[in-house]
Length: 132
Image (cartoon, rainbow, N blue to C red):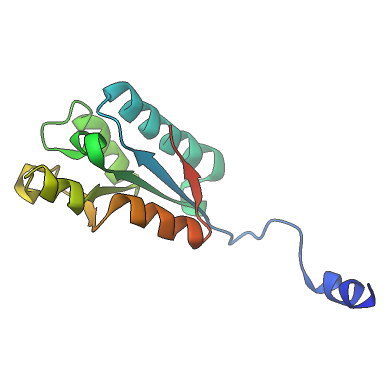
């Protein structure tokens, strides 16, 4: 108990002005309504916390990979997300398994070896996880 009392004053419980939140959003459905929901969530997070105080990634895998294809139904929103520094990450395992090439993907996105594993690693690193 004395140890805890000695340590507690050293820790600041207030929000640090330089604190940066990190959140990863999962997209694994071939459903434009879910894609729009994920993009809305990302935009709302940035608006609430401030763009400079949050790092956001949207990871698309499985049937959700269609969100990040060049002919995506939300292509105009993908451009806005990239312009707002929201990371858009495509799963290369899904691409390989469905024979999709990078030439077929939306320009400017990023790639991860395995979407599920990337999300797991982010969670282990302390990122918040959201599945819209």
